Length: 312
Image (cartoon, rainbow, N blue to C red; front, side, top):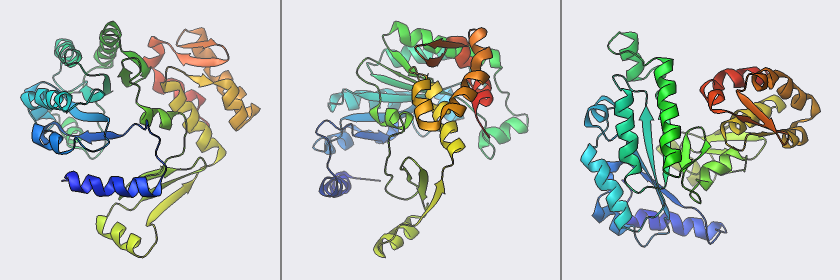
């Protein structure tokens, strides 16, 4: 929907009102079928220096199953077009654990992705969220979910393939070549404040979260009246602690207990360590330098571990 002139207006406003770092990461996110060479050429004068493409799969059968608009050929072409347009920091999103997907299918997806010359992969296991078409199909018996064992094998294959290709697993679902970690995502994981501008955008200031109304019409009306139409949630100590341990444990850096104690107090630091200790003993969590990190086996049961250390 957005053309070059629209982006020019957006960047003019951003650079007018904010001080932007000269080496700021500026990511453009798009679907494969939108990234024609002509469209990318029109954006070449803009300050984008990273692109994220919603590939999801390089298999036409699974793309149709996911109800994606693009084909396998368009997926390849979008990456090639981005590279020809000068993007040397490219992320693609992939999904695994799809109905009917085999380990061989997933291996082919990974081999294909890693041979395209991209620098970053975000890979997510399929979840059957309530209200989605996949969940309805599952409940009606039209499809079957893959077993936990198969999902775990797919994740281990993801770790192995990306490691051999030189990618770093710096977060459970994110893999990058050295120097290409997403600074945007890393800011979330390090609890840096951020501003979300536009309908449905979220903001965080360290103590509260805010989300703008989803209606474009209502959002524009509010701005014209010099107000922000948004809801806000003030985070309790336990809310902030839970966010911290949940996000930190997903990263390669892990939970820094010194930082946890400084931010949330000795009682919560002790609570975390006491409740995760059994997983240290079983080897699911590694403990060194006052830091807790998941082992590969720990990643596979990360939800269970998090349930134990979160405070309600």
